[in-house]
Image 1 (spheres, one colour):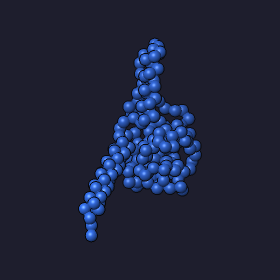
Image 2 (cartoon, rainbow, N blue to C red):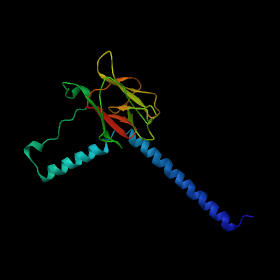
Image 3 (spheres, rainbow, N blue to C red):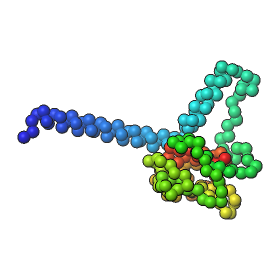
Image 4 (cartoon, helix red, strand yellow):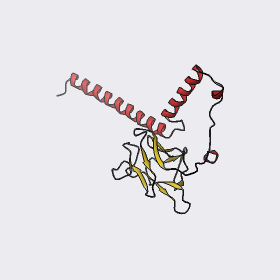
Length: 178
């Protein structure tokens, strides 16, 4: 026989469990939306905030105008020698880099990848960065990942030429060629 006390405990326990589930679902949706957001990365926003504070405390003629912004890759300054590193600029492994050789660089959660990202939004074999034989430029290809690969704030569905300093978002990680 179930007493009223046992019934009340079960009832409120299920109610708490329901709210925990709702909170986790909302948290997951928020993370998905934030990973595909066109907003600048957290580290980039922090750098801008520090620069604004320095400009307010010590104004100088050189700091009168903001730095030039390059909205598209065609207006970005070209590097003479081409990129030599794949650098993780934001995310759990920020600061790590991989030298660019003629070998293909694979990115994903699996330990067999060149760049291993421990992130629930990254597929086991998510993307690959390789030197395009036809053009000699570096290219990136999404390997059929669930959450996609974002290059310059656009989701790619075919191999794409990857110029230097163009942000690539894979899960919570942002990387670029330098």
